[in-house]
Length: 265
Image (tube, rainbow, N blue to C red; front, side):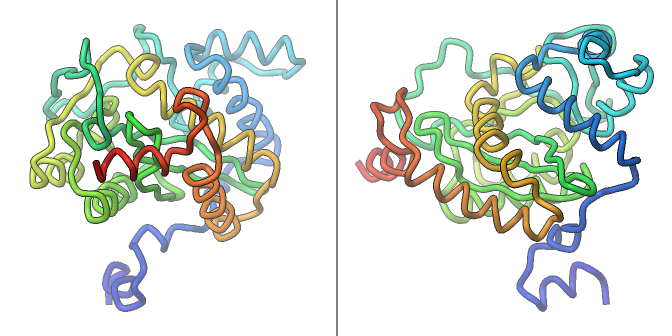
């Protein structure tokens, strides 16, 4: 029986199989990756040269080769384009950027998705979230200990099954979002596909703010030991974020209040 069949019988998403943290790095590298993650949240335009310099200022004895390798493991790249900016698989179609000058007036007009690195006490995981631009509402999320596209596709399917399809889905050009699995789900739902080659700094600003909130208000405070405790903690946090955490930009309303009221109007 395949892993997928076993998960189906148990009523679990297949990515649940991968809740064990990835932990092949040394304890020192895991500590260093945690510091890199914190620095990247504050300076997402840092590539490996600037990151290396900043780490040295913080008294880490590192070279650029080591920092660049760890950033690749973490799935991090500078938001500004440059000669080392990662590219999607050459066989994947690149879609145009559709949000320039667009006024977003209601929920489900634009969704955005992104992946972030989550440090654990003895390893790390990756988290994907899909957010509604208008309301900042987190529509779905999923986690995995690999950067395989499967967990992103599962999150997208869940968001569409619960909330219907977006008018536009906007992502970066990462392989998880340009791959056939993710694109086929969007096409089947009738969503328009938007991508941008300049990086995430402008396009995914709302979800970048979400990552800051998730990490500084939950992940860093709780120092989760494994994937199971992380899932339990994130379940609590996203419920709080959607239904209790008010946003100044939303007139001090919660994402859930804005999303549900406007979507029902």
